[in-house]
Image 1: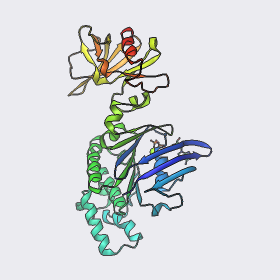
Image 2: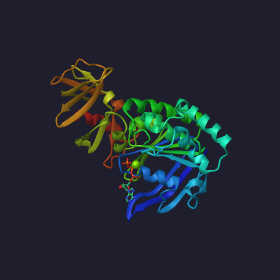
Image 3: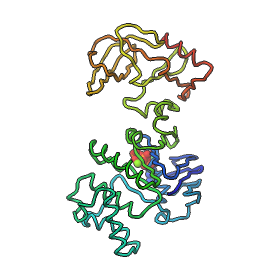
Image 4: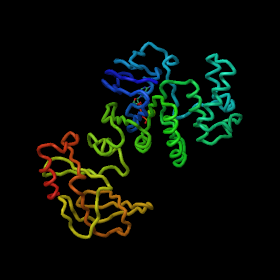
Length: 347
Ligand SMILES: Nc1ncnc2c1ncn2[C@@H]1O[C@H](COP(=O)(O)OP(=O)(O)OP(=O)(O)O)[C@@H](O)[C@H]1O
Ligand SMILES: [Mg+2]
């Protein structure tokens, strides 16, 4: 088990600053998910923990100890990559055993370890198979098992599920949550997929352009996004955000916070728009509704509205968010909060 700490870490590639003065503490034993758009620096961060792409300045601590001069193999971390490198000419057993042989672990202990770990990840029936005869999900498990036999105190995973189809990805998400529970090891998981982040994380670290936007458990990230970026990155469809000219701010609401009605409602935000698209998804229906020059996405349990129909959208004041000129969320106890709510009537 191990905690990880970044202290004022900067990473440059040929004078390009990718990560600047980053401070971050990853708690011992937690499932932490680093999420953010492509190119924001997630892999770069993981590689600094693993020691395969050292920081330009600042410190990385594992269990309180500066690891700058500690070789990757001595850090107690194991990394599973997006394009899991398993050896095609070795059986599943040989693949899992490989690192142990290199580390001169005795035969008996090797066999015992390989067998218990294979059982943990559900590979026992496949130990003598060749990788080419396995499904994508099974190969992914081989990559996991290979990392696990090293008994790392930190597990680093870089988009390990991105090569799998949607159904298998959903299944592997659950398996990883269970695996984390079973092992109790620190997991640091990188993805650009907010669904993976929301479903697996104890703590989400949301990054953009090498800067941490917010660090919070999934439900806090969803209910109390710190800024417009967080509000629109987490959630499908993302939060609707529009400009409120009269107050010189932006307001926002989640797609599921809207009530669709035939007549105008009491709430400050109740406007008549026109349905422009309808997607019936089974348990819920997504509508795009146009009002003036804005388009809002609405998630509704009601599927009886049709395209081109006019309908009132009403959002209770308690479900509204406001963002200042910098894009930061305005707190509910802000002195002008009630004024912003009232200003919605003029939207
Ligand atoms: N070896 C390198 N040399 C120069 N620039 C690099 C190098 N590695 C990464 N970068 C740059 O650093 C930035 C962050 O890259 P990184 O791989 O960490 O992004 P990421 O968040 O993992 O993105 P993705 O989701 O696409 O994997 C990118 O702009 C990338 O072009
Ligand atoms: Mg990456």
